[in-house]
Length: 174
Image 1 (cartoon, rainbow, N blue to C red):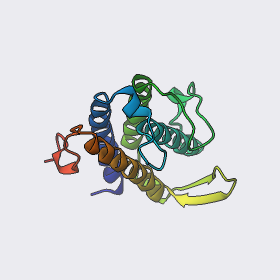
Image 2 (image 1 turned 60 degrees about the vertical axis):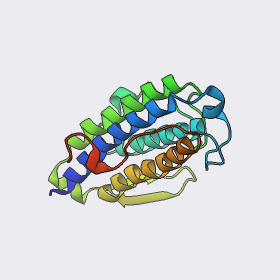
Image 3 (image 1 turned 90 degrees about the horizontal axis):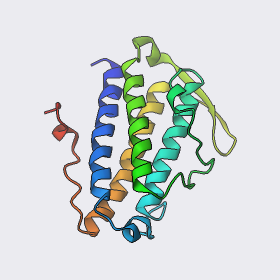
């Protein structure tokens, strides 16, 4: 399998599982969605905001080398990883869909030569880095998986069925 196919699959899985997760979150009351659930970013709302902020941050970093952010340039997002874009699930869902669609279209454009690419960026703490594109993309998708796992644990504790999460059950994969 070409290296880029892994990221194409990850982007599609990402959209599928985010869709399922947001549908499950619609079953939460506003209080359940926004209250402190002892997650790293406190609430389900805080965690979903964090994921959007970090995805936008990584896409902005990638846009320094690849023109992928054009359709997301209108989005202003907090500079802090624990910031809030919105406390409204519908608004977060709209942005999530836009970001996931960009990720899919962008990974579809990856070329074999991109396997050697290095992404240079400055962290939120001001440290400069140069990291391989392949590892950067893997980090981007793994980061989401980590925090989605926290949210699904809370959903389960609240009695919300969030559905299947295994890649092999994604439509078209099995």
